[in-house]
Image (tube, rainbow, N blue to C red; front, side, top):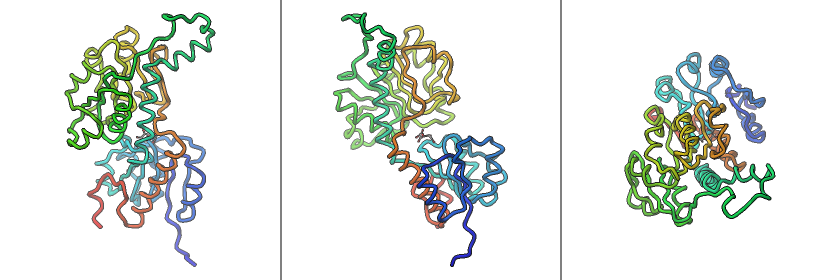
Length: 330
Ligand code: 8YV
């Protein structure tokens, strides 16, 4: 019989019970199934007691969080975006950082497209109109009239896996696809999604629908603000499934209110889970609570990949989605 004590890990947010039960076979798990988000002081204390942790976007892993974490080897994010990680601080503390790419690409691209359709065709607003009893007042001209997707131009900012997934869906709608990305795709990749690389300004000026799918970094803060919105067509829609902070929410609310943009669809917000009150007052914005990856199948796959990353790191193997590669020397 193995009498070795099981290594201690932290599961910082609620996960699927079967995944937790499986972890408990190999680890002593400090779990947070009550899902009360830790304060920074609580997180620091929790991390000081474990060798590995599963976290989500709600946990900021920085020098402060790591200050007492003398035995910590790995923090596995249940998320592809990792702007909640201070990667240099993790690397200098010798803590492996991992994320969950690929498993959520199609689900997130589906949602980006759904949000675009809901926004351009005013689906949420129409439902409110129906529920408010206005249907009997319908007419050819007095319906919530939307904007077409088919044969329009979609402009995608951030052309990674999810951006390319959205482009491929857009092709099925006969849309012209233009994109702006820090580095241009290869010719083969561009061909696969029928996409043409343009400057950010050209994209903003010519797209009927602008979709944001870029990762958040300090350099990307307010990629879309008043100046950028001023370049856009007043008939255009803006979709943000990337991260809060990429759009200046105050400038966006002002533009939507003043009719400088047709509509916006937002899954992410500055300071979420709070939403700027100016956005809450508007009818030409579709608001979603950061659910782009939220299907049961995909959330399970994200948890499973995060667990795989954690187990590999603690077994001395290379985690499949290691971010700070320099920490693996094996
Ligand atoms: C997560 C996400 O729901 O993967 C991402 O980058 O934004 C979402 O899938 C969220 O970050 C929870 O950790």
